[in-house]
Image 1 (cartoon, chains in turn brown, orange):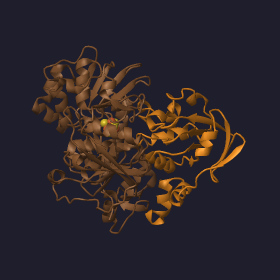
Image 2 (tube, rainbow over the protein chains, first blue to last red):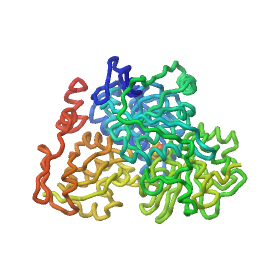
Image 3 (cartoon, rainbow over the protein chains, first blue to last red):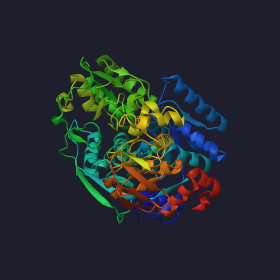
Image 4 (cartoon, rainbow over the protein chains, first blue to last red):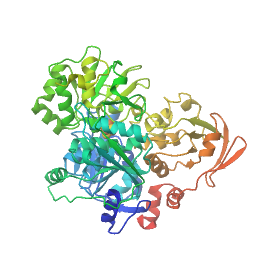
Length: 415
Length: 161
Ligand code: SF4
């Protein structure tokens, strides 16, 4: 008798739980990365308790890898000492935390997974309640295995129709951001469903769930399909049971989105909801195109980009940085020939991880420069200098833009 | 008396502490770069006890706890807004940065105004008017009274809820 979120909490707590309640719930996994672990360590040490479960704490090095500065290297040293002192076993340096969590089978339908990173809502793509928290909240989970939640109300997003060629899940979620606004779902959860979502594979589902927080949502859940359950069983090595919203579930709001006539979308500087059809910004000069991140750095994304860039060259008026979301993605794209096609086109391929997404290294923007990126937020200065600007789009639009050096509709390159 | 620093809607955590500067847990470093890009005059002129008054959805974006820590390190006594982004709200309570929800005070206050804020009662006096912040949910109040979630857990454990 509930939304996906209510069903997950009811199952975990073994009683009926309703939106609005404050609950203390057990957590299945707690993740932090090299940017948020240092503060978590400080808070954890103040609690003066042993680690709750060394096998359920996950640390990922992804925001600053390989270390770009001595300061970053020193933070890494501190994190490694913490890992060693506490016997933490799940430590990864092979890609963006959210991608790695999914690939390693650490996200299962019905689980509660918290991360010291706002895009932990990505785990909703597998039917898990994943949410981002600060370092201190996560440190409390490190020590106790539990945290408190206010069970959120849910906005149901029904997506119907099928996308035309050249239009993708990223375009869909950008349109939704325009509909809901950047705080349209604050304190609430999104639940994506409808025929278009049911037909989506893991990668597209992750793109949708990843951006839930850009609308203020605590989580972005999707009921797992058979394909998702099979993936989880394969990756986690154990059985995966599904989780479903019941037909009588109560939503605070329902949004219906028909994507049949959707155009490729672009979010203009500097708000994620500032979204237009690609046609109205075509021709705008772009200094750097970036394809990567937890939103759109997966194998499917690199394939899309390669299909446009294959046999073409990056325009001399721009530059192209590509960062595979993980080593697994990197290897698959090497095998498929996507990496070769991108390199031949003039792309610079960087180490799997967050790369320039947070403006630290591996391709940051200078004053007055404009980037077009496949990431999830285009806040002012996010990718470098405070006077740089960001546009958000799909990997296909990014690839087409790299070819022309100006914002370009990817459908121009459909064969 | 607290000086009002008035900010726009949707101030994000990248604006509060830009990604390039939060490669540290050093509080004074974080304080020094707090809001340095959206309000270049802020780091230099902020005084202990000043307050931020912002439009809706303050603190959206990343989960970086560095954001409330940076505001606190800069000397900010409280943030007043009509709404706060969820993760920021939890982080602020956890680190002991008071947040007050009061749309009327936000509307009334202008940049550079003097204001008097009583955190405990939630009363805000600005431009000769007194406004009352929304009551804090009792559970959150208890965490805040303990001085944050760490102290709450140390004192009561989860059974304290
Ligand atoms: S890729 Fe960007 S958005 Fe994703 S976790 Fe890394 S920094 Fe955050």
